[in-house]
Length: 163
Image (cartoon, rainbow, N blue to C red):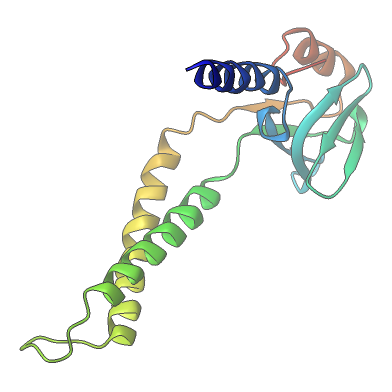
């Protein structure tokens, strides 16, 4: 009985301690475009200063000066939702096609045919679901156009997370 209580307390307190740290996935994701509208970088917002935006990706950290920023879009693009949905659908239905293969029945198919057919149908269905979810994504676009005053307004409103 005593060991169960001790184990419960250890697990409970370790979860509380861990949850206090801000992880990479907790930081807001943004895409940054230059003054011509071309995407120049994307990543998680690590720091917002008076004159720059510091992004971190899984590989590196980059500082973008305010004068280079045309606009900032929050969240991932719709294509990301579509790709993830298609991938999950293809894997799930492909695996189901393999698991349900019975080549000796009237409308039988082999495991390879089941994997291919399920993968194609799953990719199409998952892609459609990904597109539907992207409609409700609620991403925002902030126009900076290299203007320091617009940048300071955005920074003061804390719209990009930490500052």
